[in-house]
Image 1 (tube, one colour):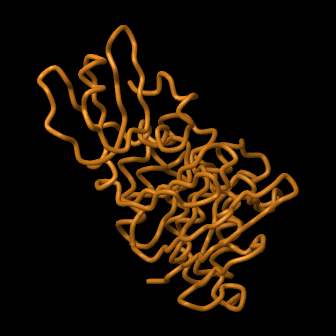
Image 2 (cartoon, helix red, strand yellow):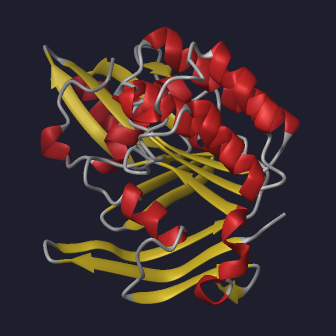
Image 3 (cartoon, rainbow, N blue to C red):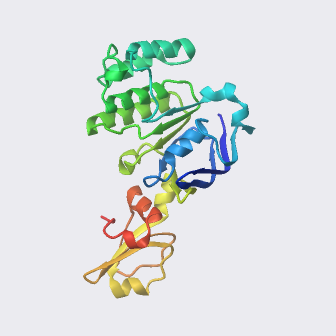
Length: 289
């Protein structure tokens, strides 16, 4: 299994610091979910990993060697993003044929079957596809490479619910047949929770969470009860507290004390927890459902 490491990586643009201290290891055959608020730097992180841009400082390593010194191993990492493009004057069939020519391990027949199953016309020019169809095709293309690390940046952008479900099933089937590291960056947190096993949260320029999904959710809680009762409890790591009509609701993490009978406990979903972990307290009213 290919091991990717980022050590103290920084990246600044004219608008300011985007990534200030990224430390991350990708080395397990599993599906990672990468989450962050708008402009958090998820796409920038992917572009750094695929050497489209260079870090200002820090190191990116592939199997303990600097990635920039191993250009011959570039095909071990692939990226599908809204900004990646194919020649607009080629048909989908021609693009897949070209891929097979230059990447002998490319799953040409599987890619054709997947495209047809998604409702794509292989004789259609790539440049005449809708934005959603282009993203669908790029996602199929990335999954059919032999890359050991697959980066999918918003792989369902512009797709309706039925098409998104097809993409999710394709990712699951592909991973089952070819276990490797797949990293999905998405704003549709609840929709991809069933796909992922590891949660990565990019916040304030750092990877603030790198935790197995089950562990993260098991440590989280939502409590609701009378305001005075909740105030009297010693609660760990309170991420959000709201009070409405005498009832207080708390989102947090950690081991809870014994709870009174008039306090209810439930487990938050990943989206609840993400919002609590990434948004300032004073902007978080009403996020708990």
